[in-house]
Length: 367
Image 1 (cartoon, rainbow, N blue to C red):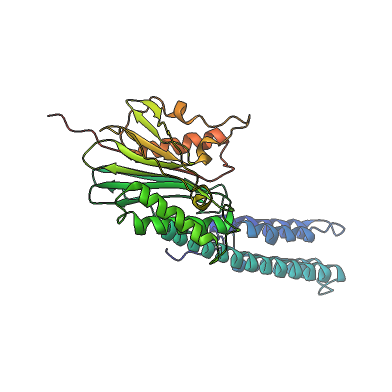
Image 2: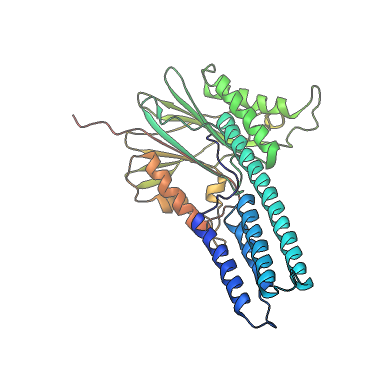
């Protein structure tokens, strides 16, 4: 990331405003009758400068105000170098100017700290949740992550893809809970998926390994009392390169949606498994569902932050209704349209993290 100044840069066209104010007040005060004193109005010049300038600019304007107040006192009272009134006004300007300079210094220091925090957050996101590659063998893919917190870059929602010798494996999930604990659990599951997705030949073996990885991390050796305190809903898919149905295991996660010729269809999950992390309690037997995924189709994988997003009236976001009629085949264009529509529905602010992954199998060219 390029080095950038954390505080506001002075816009020199705006610096002319407080300088013009100092000149105007000084001229009017000098020409005004002796019983009228406009010098206290000079404090407005350094007071407005922090809105567009840094410490040096504020200090410069404050110094000009002090000089102007001194000149006013000398010109209006030539016999008495400075009256007590003018001395008090000068001291007040010095104190106000020094306070504003200190304020600007602290503000810039805070802005630099926030810039560093954002940079670390972006790096952490790319390490824990790197962007999906645009090409996954014959597939095209794109992903979108919307954090509920304005300054957040990562949370408990997760997704990842891994190539195998015969296809592509995808995972999308949502960690129960929020904060750094959710980020830690998401990183754990993603690491386990990246390690095992290439090695486990059967989908049920892969999901079993993922479930055990989550359980192992939640407990100390020999401890069983913490089972079930944290869990992760997830869907794991295996998409073959040479066509054929997609194989899927759903662990308490919202079902995918297949968009074909502008008509969305929610995938039927016949035997959903319990969320990952509850395997030691439920001892599930994972059932592999399958559904067709043909050339030209769009496969939508999402977290409940999408479907549970509410508008001002409390209505949930109707995902299938909003995507009806979409006939494009570009995942990036779809996500751009979807992002604008979802944020419009919630009024610009989400109450929960939301993630969406779009995968398409490009249509075969005509013979």
